[in-house]
Length: 281
Image 1: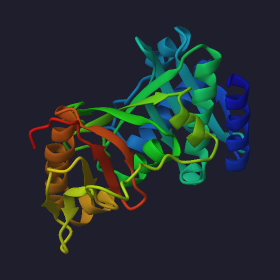
Image 2: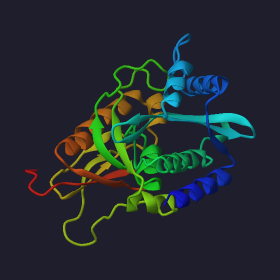
Image 3: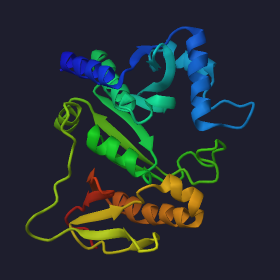
Image 4: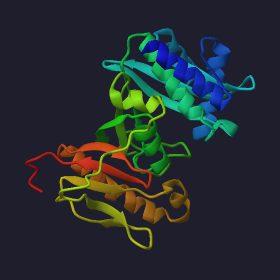
């Protein structure tokens, strides 16, 4: 499996036209820190993650890599060793690498790197409102949500997160499991929706004006929609974006807190949850 993971990572990097390598030189670590700041844009004079801290993570065996396009660093990722494997803390891509397959190549490199070190689980967090990230993480990579974390980071001052509650989904990527293995071999994970028996109920949908519409939670399978582009909505309709934040927290977060399992994310922007038998709803 380690060899297959390495070959898959090489193919993905070749397809994206990038080179991914571990960083150890102080100048490279400083460049990675500066790239992260260009992506997230923290207040002037502060850094989201300093070169010195990245140095510590690298020195103790963490995952610190740069993504290079034509010899120039256009992406980076920093992961910390955790009790149950590796926690991928932050990743950033800029310029032509965004949307060109570099993100997928980076995660496949991370998988191969982890397996080479006997690590079989990687975790990370992402904003559950961002549909493209949900599809990437749950379908293209085969990761599985483990916990809904309301306002996990508290108030953040960078331009990407400023003024927004920092709700996150914690996902576990079981690197040797069938779901992740198939996804990394090019077969995205698609949740099973029943063809017979009780049909899925819609726990959260969108009104014609784009605002969230609460639905039913009384079926064994519940669908929870998120906006197609909440990042654009935060600019064009910030109040509506905030409504979606609280609606998703109440419905998706509430179901997960009660023990429901997120089995995947559909191409049209819906989380699929299976409720445990015996749930009073």
